Length: 507
Image (cartoon, rainbow, N blue to C red):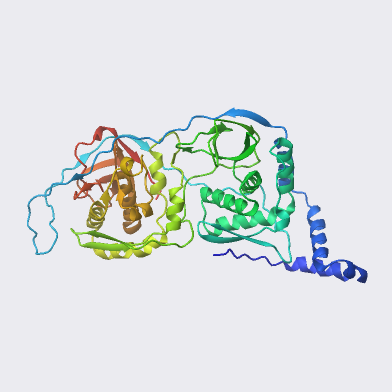
């Protein structure tokens, strides 16, 4: 797919151009082409307007020549790991079905029991994506030069001709400053506008946007220091926190965020954690200057990432108790994106990392392929029956596997990953089940963490018996996707109920 944008000149622009041409001497046409006249007009018109952003870039370029300091990185925070509690099979009573071929229903009374909660981890409120320090106006161009590149199987196009290419002579303070001054000219404004348009059109989250900018810069300038500077400039002009660093003659981009990304060393600067985009450096010289209005990167994914369409083979899911059967394929481009997504916590709480996965919307492909058959199965059922059927589906349609044996360490899955990979564990099942209940039943769900185990709890609008927790004025009933065969309201045995923690979800 190639991004198409409206690049037509405004009527007022053409009126001015025609007016200029009409008063030019005839000799002018013999010496200059129409494009040269147009370019001169554009430069003169733009030079009359000196914006606040121009001042910001001029000051920032000056800082880049003088504001470098040596910093030591903080050690990487390892991803939390603890021994996982293996799945348990629920012991159903020896009861014959009332009607032949109907599922056996356990009518044993479920004891109502409130579980204590020692901590409630609040959800992180979404924030608008950063924006330029002031609106960026497009520069009128008669025949714009287009540059095409790919990002995760999407063909994209931006206005970037060969005249925008440059190379840093060396990685020195003076050369970096001169490079920023060059990038600050109006010739690059259309490129910034196009990049922001791509972000909006493809619903790119902050992480995806930075990766897209990097893909463009490397395609445009090659893999080197010049591409790093161009990426940093585009990222800063888009409103994000960025720092430039140098080490052993190479330039590095550092992006700022409130999150702590596991396994990566970082530099705490100006109230944010700055991570090197590529590589790990224990020490480096950093230009310690902030661009006006800069905002932190958020690792929340609020919308489906509209990436290339490269779908896997369809996978079959089946749960015998309620005769639930469904098929689904997954976008491999999305899987590739998720595979490189940082695992991180926020607000100094490692349990917050699971909310990021549970709050990421399920893709359109899953909603179109997996959901219809599930909706048909639960049609006409009350909320409790439907939640129990979906619970049984997740309990029995997926093979359990331990992360440390499969991946060499803990790794939570986005919903699409659980639907693609052959094995999943308790947090993956809980994240998927939380999506199914919210999307198909419209009920509130939260995650419940016990030492070594993750489950879910659902807020039903009608009275439901079983184990439950209370948050605010709402009662949430335990639903454990890893307690195989257990109905709604049953907690897996031998868990440390006295240390339950609740992770709230936004949706």
